[in-house]
Image 1 (cartoon, one colour):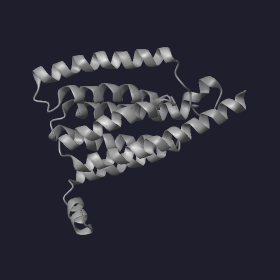
Image 2 (tube, rainbow, N blue to C red):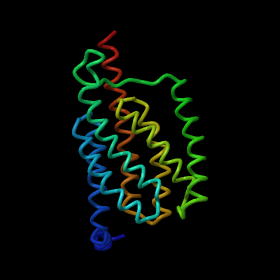
Image 3 (cartoon, helix red, strand yellow):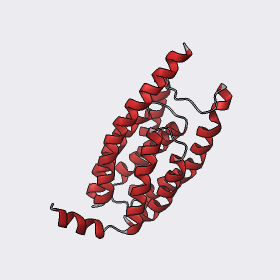
Length: 205
């Protein structure tokens, strides 16, 4: 694709889709830096994305972004005030034990199967089981981000890879490009949060 083709493609991107993508990127960049203002960006991105996903008949994705908007409010509160219970001004990065991961992953698989069956039998969803897995897993992982759980970045690596494939299948190429970028930023986020978590752990030792 030449420069002219790329410009023509960008000019044809629906405004809602473009705005949602821009706020999504802003959210992730700020989250990597543990900047509290990632959550207002997440709220705006989610509100815009609801309309785009509904139009593409990805209903659980649309519902997921309603949840994202609510979680943006929760995340803002947690990042700003959640550290008080631990005697710190801000919520620190923490890790989950293996047992918690087992419950989270196992529960996600079971709920994904149930939601996928429901979407398959009751709606005209395009890819019901894949859509359901992304939805359920993203709910769990968004909660992990709101609580500053380090391993959220590993979960996003899996989810964003599947989402990239999903959006290509639905010909939402602008969102596919976004998730390709997300995969790069997720790796950066994992490295940076692990560094900060390790430094905080060593300082507390």
